[in-house]
Image 1 (tube, rainbow, N blue to C red):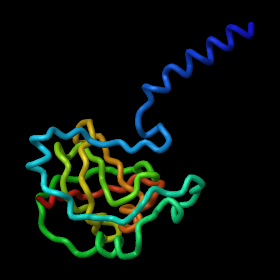
Image 2 (cartoon, rainbow, N blue to C red; image 1 turned 90 degrees about the vertical axis):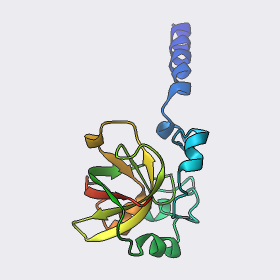
Image 3 (cartoon, rainbow, N blue to C red; image 1 turned 180 degrees about the vertical axis):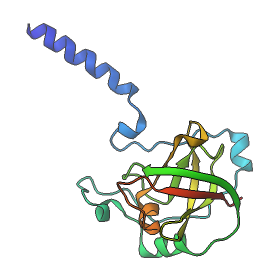
Length: 164
């Protein structure tokens, strides 16, 4: 009987290597970019000094490691850009610092701007491609949602603009 439990435990652990990055502690998913695409993709305008949150982080304040200067820069008025459309966003991985939106509305990484009509606020973000249909929804960083004053546990509707 002990051998059956041991084998079952080992079999369960073999699948751990195939876990999605967002389920792996400390993993930081990255979007695949060809070398050719990387040279044509403009660098995002947001440079954040945010670092990974401490291992014992439990609150939004502890997870949001962006500085006040970062928040002011990200919230600075930006206009224009190519309107990519509306998306419903949920909170992305809170352990990933910075201002970003993972969305199926883009095919390549680049700078963007997101507007939350309910608060009238706007935030500059790094747009990161997310596999799925354009209406499949997006994931947004904790810091960006806080700047927009959007509900962290809700599903806010956001307007997305590409700034390149």
